[in-house]
Length: 158
Image (cartoon, rainbow, N blue to C red; front, side):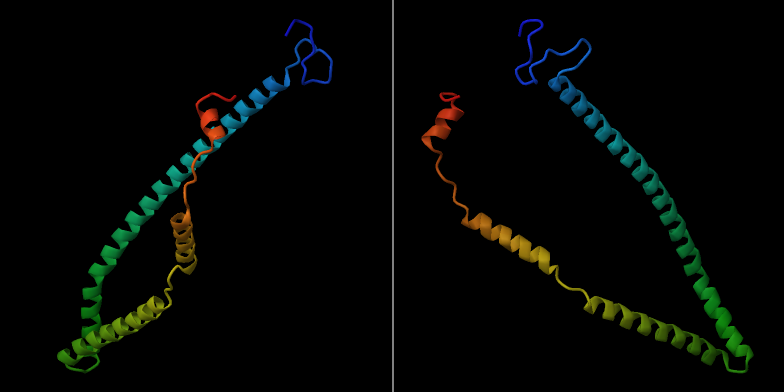
C-alpha cells in the first residue's frame, strides 16, 4: 500500500503517526495474552511444587509418628495387663482380657470397613459415557472424499 493511503479495512482515514494498525494491536494483545498464560502456568507450578514439598514432609512425619505409635502398642498392652493383674486377677487372665479387647476392636473396625466397602458403586456415568463413545465409533463409517475436497487438498482449487 502506498504511503499515506488508507487501510482498506479501516474507516477511510490514514493512521496518525505513532498509531498502530488493527493487526499490530491484535499481535500485541496476542503476545500479552500468551505471556500472561505462561506466567500463570509458572505461578501454578511454583505453588504446586511448594505444596508437594509440604505434603511429602507431612507424609514422612506422619509415617514416623505411626511407627513410633506402633512400637508403643506392645508396651501399653503389657502395662494394661500388669495393671489388671495389680487389681487382683491372675497374670494369664489379665493378658487374655487385653487380647480380647484388641480382638473386639479389630472386629468393630472390620465391620466398619465392610460397611464402607458395600457402599462402593460402579462408576455408572463413566461406563455409560464410554459405551456411548464405543457405539459411536463402531457405527462411524468413513465417507469417501468428494472430488472438490481432493482437488482442494492437491492445490488445484484455491
